[in-house]
Image (cartoon, rainbow, N blue to C red; front, side, top):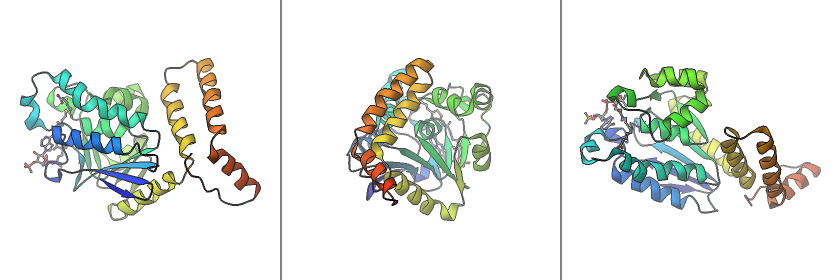
Length: 250
Ligand code: T3D
């Protein structure tokens, strides 16, 4: 975990095993996500060490988990929910291969960019499992149900370019330039009006299940909150003074 100004970077760090999830990896991620609640942190990056982003569950630890559902509830679920609850943008910087619950993790983030070295593999179906850790929830929202189903049922490895064409990632960057572009994008997000960005995140999460009437009302309520922020005052003042705004995230 590393802090650079208002950006916190969380690096999954088991490069020899493509950062596959063990209990220790879950615990490290849980602690890092707790630390990211610090209001001084205004953007979070999740990435992987070495040539992988995350290869999902460590398959050598499966035997130690007699109750799979309980293991998911105890390890994956709190971290997925913590990412959605963070009141700041979370960027998945997909540096390399991403499979199974690693794919779910990337898709739980607010946005994804990929290195040209990245690849996306459903994983679950390859070993006779169903997508978990939010895989069915996020992937079908990102891709639409027909494409998501066909992909998740096939275990096809998707290149970074294909992922961009499908809208799974918003940008693909040459591997050499990937760390610098990740830092640039994270710094831009961290310099934004964090309250408004967090409230936008909450509205988007709500939009899929709301009626239009409910969503209009939710927008009105959260707009009152945004309009009471210091950053709204700064945004309007900067516009009128014809200068760039200096948002403080409150
Ligand atoms: O109870 C619960 O927790 C259920 C939860 C389930 C969630 C899930 O995530 S299920 C899906 C689990 N993941 C997979 O099935 C993916 C398995 N891995 C792969 O298919 C491939 O490794 C990749 C497509 C991701 C990458 O292929 P490649 O050729 O680039 O690398 P590799 O040579 O296969 O892997 C490199 C090393 O990482 C290798 O170790 P070694 O031989 O050099 O010592 C390999 O064994 C290791 N590794 C890769 N994935 C995993 C792994 N070790 C343990 N678990 C892994 N998932």
